[in-house]
Image (tube, rainbow, N blue to C red; front, side, top):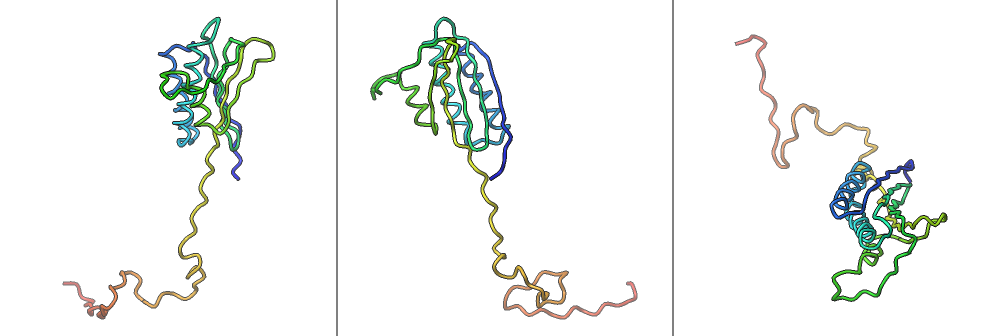
Length: 180
């Protein structure tokens, strides 16, 4: 397992429609910088939904903080606002045009949750995504056959490519030591 140091990014904003798109781009750019491109779409979708909820429901203001934390195998994104009321997750009506935000967050994330802040100054809604592990390097196809070969190839002239199968090689023409 590759050890990654903890990485952290925080953005404070008013959750207004014009700012939500900017934060989405900031989150995408940060994940690109951390080489987490596969997480861009789910993280951008989920943070957009959380910010839209702050815009629609948070009282007394729309001020919030988005925090992105990368630790080893997990990316956690949280949105903190000043409204202590926790959101409730309604039953999804397939014909509804709104009310699916937290269901979307749940669908694209590995885990998610919410809690009121201990000091009563608001709440935090968060989600986590699994960090894809780097692929192990593919073994060479020669690892099992010929890797320990000690004898040189059958050909003696390695400066030229081998002729195609079935073609006989001619001896090189004699060269004159006298220039033309």
